[in-house]
Length: 386
Image (cartoon, rainbow, N blue to C red; front, side):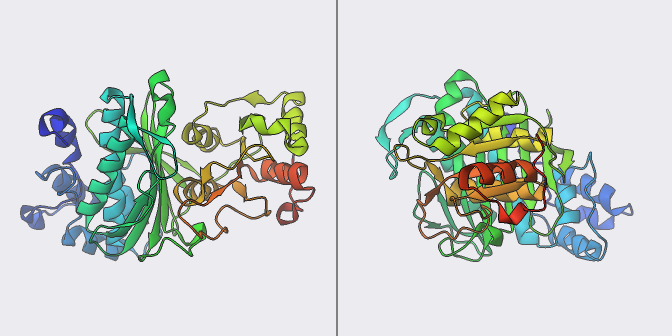
């Protein structure tokens, strides 16, 4: 990236968890010490955001204490308390740096189509490829990523690190950037160096960046409760603003692929139910904002199904599995691939594996399965309220 273009962003991004040697003599409480040391950092955005050995040691001492999400914490502070693995903390920080940069680029980069397509046949936009490059760069410099692949570069690249493998959609909804709708980044993190033969349930973390009037970094960690939102501040810090642990019932729906109602009678009946029961329609055409609103509003349902004349478009590895972890850690549910199972339980057999999906409250996912497939054995004891 050009230094001149990104100088303002890099200045803010440099304030991450790198502890200077001089901080060793500080006689203050651990959280104050960490904040002071982070502010003393002079590292660059991608190469200098590694948490120090001292910070990692301090985190291990806290491991005996149950992690509690504290509204108002910075992302660094939250990760120190919620995640014991320093490599995973580093990787999540690196992703946050890339998302911070992409947020700036989305506001300024070209949205014109290029003369090439990706291996899936989709036209690549300039802003897609820029986001893709930034994410690969951040993961390479993290030192914690062995393999990474994206919707634009589906064959995994060896990034030379160790610990985790990452799959991501660099800019979901890029075709609506020029309309100024919200768009986002989706990613999932798997342990080791395999992205085939895995399921979403094996993810150790997932997240999405939402680029709209506000820039939000939404993450879930396998071993920490809840789904957590961090808001980008003017000074470049990520501030913890919301934790979601329960998605309740409420009349809000986001119906993807409505063309399928033409020759999928079950889907047609389900949509008719939503309309007849006066559900509020909230659909932008971008999967990230449409799913994120379920977490924010703590209610609702998102559907995207197929029919004889419409094929599945959503990728299991890059989109569906990561979002399933976020929604389910937030207290919701998912139904995937027409198999009456969670989106976390479908095995990834190929990188371009596509599927259909429903996300929402437990009651709404039960209703979805009953309308679409005639039964919902997983949720037979759950009432699907109107």
